Length: 221
Image 1: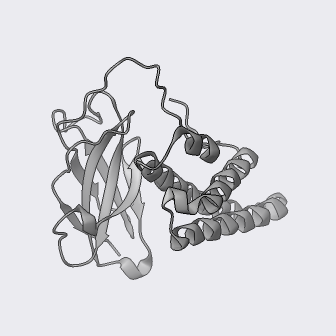
Image 2 (image 1 turned 135 degrees about the vertical axis):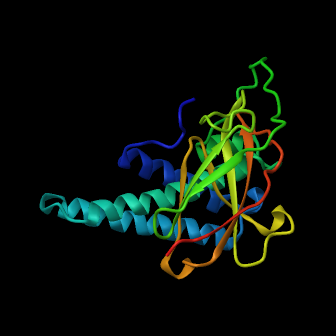
């Protein structure tokens, strides 16, 4: 499946501006809060500043290249999470999807994708500072990097803190990972804290599988 987020910086800039402008102009209809919009516009500005710095200093091989990449990764991750959330929002129509520039489901498809009946199993590599390398796999084949048939990604939700979550409402969506492993990166002031994860499969039609068990790990410092 072709990714709706462009790879090149120029195309990505145009697409991100289209997405954020549409969200801004249709916030009420989409159910987007002011804080959400502020986050997107701030990360958009940070990426543009970092990219400008990189372009200006490219000849001198400035570290701004990595800064621009990191800033884009943050912005792209947030845009992808918002897009994934919007795809599951019952208020969203195909008109909204076209305006946002995200995938419009093909209503002509007749094949049936089964809703997943199993949850991902998880292993986490703690070898890097401030980072969890999250490996997930199908319960039926845990030793292989596989997903159930029809599954396009894995939702990864997290809660940071000592207390184990009582239910999924206490977690926030970290990412919708299409491949394993996924690297969850944290700041220095989060080192030593507990990260509690719950995962579930999502199909190409946006259907969700059951939640995994809770996996808890200390963030290495």
